Length: 79
Image: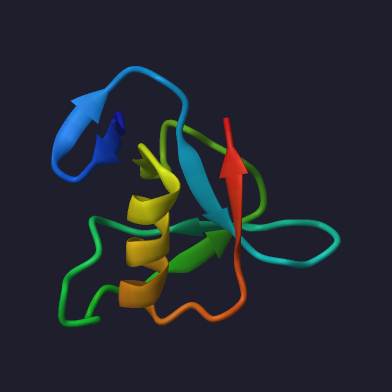
């Protein structure tokens, strides 16, 4: 499935922010569009695969997704 970059509901073609772990060897959070009720489950994958990951169009959107996923330790990776 091809992913798009999402910025508050709009698709765009510029850079994206991906959520990753804070470990020395980063892992990336793989998830569908996070639900407001926090019911979305995220898993981690070992490398940045933009065809599988959902990219946020800005830091605010990435921060909102992290909150909805219940993440407390994460970094933004801008690509």
